[in-house]
Length: 317
Ligand code: NDP
Image (cartoon, rainbow, N blue to C red; front, side):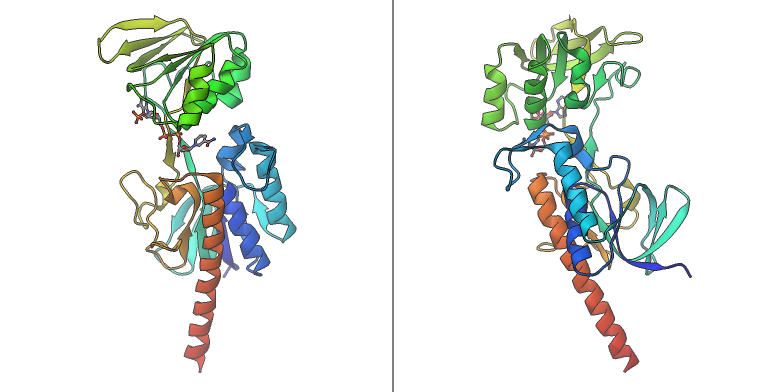
């Protein structure tokens, strides 16, 4: 039989790397699979000013490089691979990597995070990467000096609209209600920017263009008045979906797919499987809370292994 790992960590955001630091320092020899976006969501953000310990702030990608280095320093094996399937019906648990290789694990820590949501508009998928984007920080640069639109009224949309306002000529911000969900400080930043125009009660209905974005059709959902924004890019910042599809046959989840954990712990309904970070958190969704739950998951896994070991010793006696 192939080697059974003590702990396999799935995902490489703040939750996964923090779990790795704790598990490695506890001698659990963790293996961490990075997934298809090594470093997670923070690699597509700019300034992080609310992570304690960085009084001057830090760039998201740099922070994730630091997290990875810290996990590696204590011996975590970090593997650039994707867990494509799991089987939690037998113990030890089985994970399939990149649809080929199988790995067995006594404990599994899920830190797969969440991914950007899309609107599903005509033209959106076709023009993805040609002016349609869910990451202003990644793609805004290509539209410097031009007019662009962004959808959403949360903190992400505000942050990205502010970012775009520094490089683009004009930013239309489409908010579907007459108020934002964003925190006041973020909203005020957007309201103060001279080149951001907020279009309240406004929704996009189609992205226009053949090989690149040539405009966006919009509708005012109060007056039903339709018009076209002459923009070269269309950014979407309407929230995220947890990356938990591969676990749905085994784990209890809420209706959106966030994994349910036993209150006060990171334990799931399956023995030896723990969940941390945004995959199980629809409320706080912060780097620091993700890191905190990553620590909890490693401690919970360590305790679980210790209990299993003492059960085995008792059985032998
Ligand atoms: P949120 O869920 O907070 O906001 C989503 C926004 O998109 C809402 O305004 C929502 O409108 C709108 N929306 C959703 N679906 C549609 C749709 N189909 N059409 C049009 N608009 C739509 O997501 P965020 O990604 O903004 O934030 C997630 C979490 O991350 C939050 O807790 C936030 O505070 C945090 N965050 C913090 C940051 C920071 O502190 N620097 C930066 C970014 C995020 P409606 O309100 O009508 O539902």
